[in-house]
Image (tube, rainbow, N blue to C red):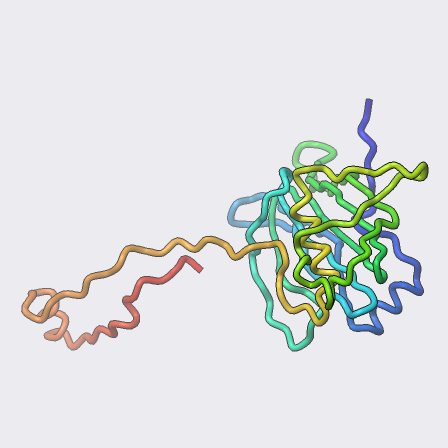
Length: 236
């Protein structure tokens, strides 16, 4: 049986809600794009962890691996404004975790995204599968101010139409808790779930002593060596 897919990469919000978010300076961009890496000759997905909050409401999206693991950001752009882009992630597959908060009510969408090509050699398209959808989840805490210490440790409860609790997939609980903290983070200016990439540092370079022939030859040739330029650096 073919799995149910969700072609939408984001929560579907009424036009009035989108307009109010924009007027409040909250810019959340859950869309994912397909990019081609010429060096590795492969396509990857590009996502933007973005969004933020004001006191009354918030909108945010982050990304994680298929098992809920944190992913390293590719670049973290600086900005003169808040509640916008915080980090860019590139990966062959992504899981998006998006939330909208209005006071104590939360809309939540978790979706898995991967690349699939219709035929060999064709440009791949994004294939999305719905993982979890929480409608009108409830969390009667003031995570912006009074109960701020609980932000990042708790998630809203979502229910079926019959009033039964809908359980979050265990592997995505940490990501959901991070997004809940983000939609309660006024003037947000940092990433809540993507992490700094590990940078590989080269081995220290030992400068030649004055008495060594290498140093003598360099001076004889009129060359100068700036010690700062030989310091160990990351791969960038």
